[in-house]
Amino acid sequence: DQQVKQNSPSLSVQEGRISILNCDYTNSMFDYFLWYKKYPAEGPTFLISISSIKDKNEDGRFTVFLNKSAKHLSLHIVPSQPGDSAVYFCAASAYQGAQKLVFGQGTRLTINP
Amino acid sequence: KAGVTQTPRYLIKTRGQQVTLSCSPISGHRSVSWYQQTPGQGLQFLFEYFSETQRNKGNFPGRFSGRQFSNSRSEMNVSTLELGDSALYLCASSSGSTYEQFFGPGTRLTVL
Image (cartoon, rainbow over all chains, first blue to last red; front, side):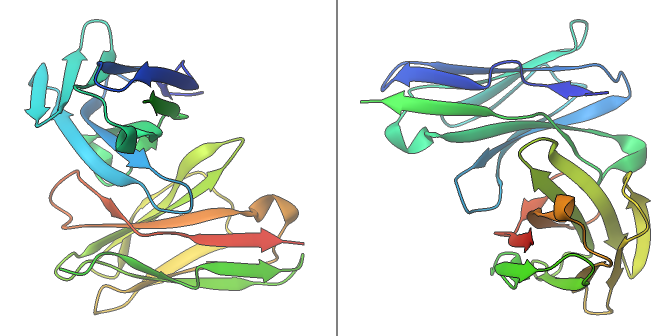
Protein backbone atom coordinates (compact mmCIF):
# COMPACT_ATOMS: atom_id res chain seq x y z
CA ASP A 1 0.00 0.00 0.00
CA GLN A 2 1.85 3.03 -1.27
CA GLN A 3 0.63 5.99 0.76
CA VAL A 4 2.79 8.54 -1.06
CA LYS A 5 3.03 8.38 -4.83
CA GLN A 6 5.14 10.18 -7.36
CA ASN A 7 3.71 9.00 -10.64
CA SER A 8 6.37 10.47 -12.89
CA PRO A 9 9.62 8.51 -12.66
CA SER A 10 11.41 11.15 -14.72
CA LEU A 11 11.06 14.71 -15.96
CA SER A 12 13.17 16.68 -18.43
CA VAL A 13 13.10 20.50 -18.42
CA GLN A 14 14.97 23.21 -20.30
CA GLU A 15 17.33 25.37 -18.26
CA GLY A 16 15.62 28.58 -17.17
CA ARG A 17 12.11 27.15 -17.42
CA ILE A 18 9.85 26.00 -14.61
CA SER A 19 10.10 22.46 -13.22
CA ILE A 20 6.96 21.05 -11.62
CA LEU A 21 7.18 17.85 -9.63
CA ASN A 22 4.01 16.21 -8.39
CA CYS A 23 3.10 14.03 -5.45
CA ASP A 24 -0.15 12.40 -4.31
CA TYR A 25 -0.97 10.87 -0.96
CA THR A 26 -3.75 8.70 0.37
CA ASN A 27 -3.47 8.93 4.15
CA SER A 28 -5.59 11.80 5.48
CA MET A 29 -3.65 11.66 8.77
CA PHE A 30 -0.59 13.16 7.11
CA ASP A 31 -0.19 16.72 8.30
CA TYR A 32 3.31 17.65 7.21
CA PHE A 33 5.02 17.27 3.87
CA LEU A 34 8.63 17.59 2.83
CA TRP A 35 10.67 17.57 -0.36
CA TYR A 36 14.16 16.15 -0.54
CA LYS A 37 16.71 16.17 -3.32
CA LYS A 38 19.17 13.33 -3.79
CA TYR A 39 22.35 13.03 -5.80
CA PRO A 40 23.90 9.59 -6.47
CA ALA A 41 25.99 8.20 -3.60
CA GLU A 42 24.73 10.91 -1.22
CA GLY A 43 21.98 11.08 1.35
CA PRO A 44 18.81 13.09 0.64
CA THR A 45 19.08 16.83 1.19
CA PHE A 46 16.13 18.65 2.74
CA LEU A 47 14.71 21.29 0.42
CA ILE A 48 11.42 22.67 1.65
CA SER A 49 8.41 21.63 3.72
CA ILE A 50 4.80 22.58 4.28
CA SER A 51 2.32 22.09 7.07
CA SER A 52 -1.22 20.99 6.28
CA ILE A 53 -2.55 24.28 7.66
CA LYS A 54 -0.94 26.10 4.74
CA ASP A 55 -1.44 25.82 1.00
CA LYS A 56 1.83 27.38 -0.12
CA ASN A 57 5.37 27.78 1.11
CA GLU A 58 8.14 29.55 -0.71
CA ASP A 59 11.92 29.52 -0.31
CA GLY A 60 13.93 31.22 -3.01
CA ARG A 61 13.49 29.36 -6.27
CA PHE A 62 11.46 26.62 -4.60
CA THR A 63 7.73 26.75 -3.91
CA VAL A 64 5.58 23.95 -2.59
CA PHE A 65 1.82 23.93 -3.09
CA LEU A 66 -0.58 21.76 -1.11
CA ASN A 67 -4.13 20.89 -2.15
CA LYS A 68 -5.58 19.01 0.81
CA SER A 69 -8.92 18.25 -0.80
CA ALA A 70 -7.17 16.57 -3.71
CA LYS A 71 -4.45 15.08 -1.46
CA HIS A 72 -1.90 16.51 -3.86
CA LEU A 73 1.23 18.56 -3.53
CA SER A 74 3.67 19.93 -6.04
CA LEU A 75 7.15 21.43 -6.02
CA HIS A 76 7.88 24.28 -8.40
CA ILE A 77 11.46 25.23 -9.24
CA VAL A 78 11.87 28.56 -11.03
CA PRO A 79 14.11 29.11 -12.87
CA SER A 80 15.53 25.62 -13.29
CA GLN A 81 19.31 25.32 -13.25
CA PRO A 82 21.63 22.47 -14.33
CA GLY A 83 22.57 21.86 -10.68
CA ASP A 84 18.94 21.00 -10.00
CA SER A 85 19.36 17.73 -11.89
CA ALA A 86 18.81 15.06 -9.24
CA VAL A 87 16.18 12.69 -7.87
CA TYR A 88 13.45 14.46 -5.91
CA PHE A 89 11.53 12.70 -3.17
CA CYS A 90 8.27 13.74 -1.64
CA ALA A 91 7.76 12.66 1.99
CA ALA A 92 4.89 12.86 4.46
CA SER A 93 4.46 12.52 8.19
CA ALA A 94 1.59 12.20 10.64
CA TYR A 95 1.76 13.91 14.02
CA GLN A 96 1.70 10.71 15.99
CA GLY A 97 4.78 9.46 14.19
CA ALA A 98 6.48 12.74 13.54
CA GLN A 99 9.87 11.26 12.88
CA LYS A 100 8.52 8.50 10.65
CA LEU A 101 8.65 9.81 7.11
CA VAL A 102 6.82 8.00 4.34
CA PHE A 103 8.53 8.59 1.01
CA GLY A 104 7.39 8.50 -2.57
CA GLN A 105 9.39 6.58 -5.16
CA GLY A 106 11.13 9.69 -6.45
CA THR A 107 11.22 11.64 -9.71
CA ARG A 108 14.46 12.02 -11.64
CA LEU A 109 14.71 15.61 -12.84
CA THR A 110 17.06 16.42 -15.71
CA ILE A 111 17.74 20.04 -16.60
CA ASN A 112 18.90 20.44 -20.18
CA PRO A 113 21.16 23.37 -21.11
CA LYS B 1 27.86 22.76 12.24
CA ALA B 2 28.98 19.30 11.15
CA GLY B 3 26.40 17.17 9.39
CA VAL B 4 25.29 13.61 10.00
CA THR B 5 28.10 11.12 9.64
CA GLN B 6 27.80 7.41 8.96
CA THR B 7 30.40 4.69 9.12
CA PRO B 8 31.40 2.68 7.28
CA ARG B 9 30.42 4.06 3.88
CA TYR B 10 30.67 0.68 2.15
CA LEU B 11 30.41 -2.84 3.47
CA ILE B 12 30.45 -6.29 1.90
CA LYS B 13 29.16 -9.26 3.88
CA THR B 14 28.04 -12.80 3.15
CA ARG B 15 24.70 -14.40 3.89
CA GLY B 16 24.24 -15.40 7.51
CA GLN B 17 26.66 -12.87 8.90
CA GLN B 18 25.68 -9.91 11.00
CA VAL B 19 26.57 -6.26 10.57
CA THR B 20 26.63 -3.09 12.68
CA LEU B 21 26.31 0.36 11.17
CA SER B 22 27.03 3.58 13.02
CA CYS B 23 25.54 7.06 12.87
CA SER B 24 26.56 10.31 14.55
CA PRO B 25 23.81 12.94 14.45
CA ILE B 26 24.13 16.68 14.12
CA SER B 27 25.31 18.19 17.39
CA GLY B 28 22.34 18.93 19.63
CA HIS B 29 19.98 16.60 17.79
CA ARG B 30 18.44 13.95 20.00
CA SER B 31 16.45 11.98 17.45
CA VAL B 32 18.02 9.49 15.06
CA SER B 33 16.01 7.64 12.43
CA TRP B 34 17.13 4.85 10.12
CA TYR B 35 15.89 4.18 6.60
CA GLN B 36 16.57 1.49 4.02
CA GLN B 37 16.71 2.40 0.34
CA THR B 38 16.40 -0.29 -2.33
CA PRO B 39 15.56 0.03 -6.04
CA GLY B 40 12.38 -1.97 -5.61
CA GLN B 41 10.97 -0.62 -2.35
CA GLY B 42 12.36 2.90 -2.30
CA LEU B 43 13.07 4.63 0.99
CA GLN B 44 11.50 2.79 3.92
CA PHE B 45 11.50 3.73 7.59
CA LEU B 46 13.19 1.25 9.91
CA PHE B 47 13.04 2.86 13.37
CA GLU B 48 13.64 6.03 15.33
CA TYR B 49 15.45 6.56 18.60
CA PHE B 50 15.04 9.54 20.89
CA SER B 51 16.90 9.93 24.17
CA GLU B 52 18.09 6.31 24.03
CA THR B 53 14.54 4.93 23.58
CA GLN B 54 12.97 3.50 20.46
CA ARG B 55 10.06 5.83 19.75
CA ASN B 56 8.83 4.59 16.36
CA LYS B 57 9.25 1.38 14.43
CA GLY B 58 8.64 0.41 10.82
CA ASN B 59 7.59 -2.94 9.35
CA PHE B 60 10.88 -4.79 9.34
CA PRO B 61 11.67 -8.20 10.87
CA GLY B 62 13.30 -8.53 14.25
CA ARG B 63 16.68 -9.18 12.58
CA PHE B 64 16.88 -5.41 12.30
CA SER B 65 17.60 -3.72 15.61
CA GLY B 66 19.15 -0.55 16.86
CA ARG B 67 20.19 1.39 19.87
CA GLN B 68 21.12 4.90 20.87
CA PHE B 69 23.76 6.01 23.29
CA SER B 70 23.70 8.85 25.79
CA ASN B 71 25.61 11.09 23.36
CA SER B 72 22.82 10.49 20.76
CA ARG B 73 25.04 8.39 18.52
CA SER B 74 23.16 5.41 17.16
CA GLU B 75 23.96 1.97 15.85
CA MET B 76 21.90 -0.32 13.68
CA ASN B 77 22.41 -4.07 13.65
CA VAL B 78 21.25 -6.61 11.12
CA SER B 79 21.66 -10.26 12.05
CA THR B 80 21.54 -13.35 9.81
CA LEU B 81 22.00 -11.31 6.66
CA GLU B 82 19.98 -12.19 3.57
CA LEU B 83 20.65 -11.25 -0.04
CA GLY B 84 17.63 -8.93 0.07
CA ASP B 85 19.27 -6.87 2.80
CA SER B 86 21.60 -5.38 0.21
CA ALA B 87 20.68 -1.71 0.26
CA LEU B 88 21.71 1.82 1.09
CA TYR B 89 21.11 2.40 4.80
CA LEU B 90 20.47 6.02 5.66
CA CYS B 91 20.54 7.68 9.02
CA ALA B 92 18.72 10.95 9.67
CA SER B 93 18.87 13.25 12.65
CA SER B 94 16.39 15.72 14.00
CA SER B 95 15.92 17.85 17.06
CA GLY B 96 13.01 15.57 17.86
CA SER B 97 10.48 18.37 18.11
CA THR B 98 10.31 19.27 14.42
CA TYR B 99 9.45 17.24 11.35
CA GLU B 100 12.55 18.08 9.33
CA GLN B 101 15.16 15.35 9.25
CA PHE B 102 18.71 15.72 7.96
CA PHE B 103 20.32 12.73 6.32
CA GLY B 104 23.81 11.32 6.34
CA PRO B 105 25.54 9.99 3.22
CA GLY B 106 24.48 6.42 3.92
CA THR B 107 26.17 3.04 4.21
CA ARG B 108 26.06 0.87 1.11
CA LEU B 109 25.69 -2.75 2.27
CA THR B 110 26.21 -5.56 -0.19
CA VAL B 111 25.32 -9.10 0.86
CA LEU B 112 26.88 -11.88 -1.23
